[in-house]
Structures are given as C-alpha cells and as structure tokens.
Length: 99
Image (cartoon, rainbow, N blue to C red):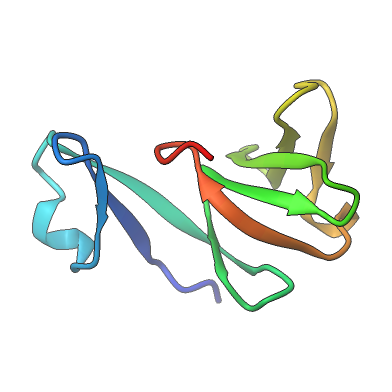
C-alpha cells in the first residue's frame, strides 16, 4: 500500500515546510503536493509537481492522471509517459521552485 505523505508549500514565504502536513490542512496559505509512492534513480521521493530529468535531458513534470501518474514533457505537453515507461531519472526541482 502506498504511504500517504505530502509536501507543504507556504504560498506567502514561497518555501516548502518540513512540518507535518495535517497541521495546516485547513489553512489556505498552504498548498499540498502528495507523494506518488515512487522514488527516482537516486532514491528521492517523488511528489506531484516535481520536475524530473531523464537521462537524455528531457524534463518532465509529475502530474495526476486520475488512473495513473503521468510524466509530462515540459517543452512538448503532448509528450506524456507513464511511470512504467520511464528509464533512469532524477528529481531536479518542483513547479513552485522553478529551476
């Protein structure tokens, strides 16, 4: 079973907080990004909104696809991969903290 975890984004301070997500669940100042249950090639946990880099340099954003996690190319939005189609990759950033 997938572990339920979140990253907490402070919209005012523009930083991720290292605190339990449930402390802020009702506060609109915070945005939550859920852990997708996968890790990159360097064992870094992956969350919705994370930006990954594939071995060929392609950058993708992790998005919710309802029935599966989608990795959408940042340059060509129609170039989508499912998690089982990805080769080695690593988390390089997040949509709230541009590269």
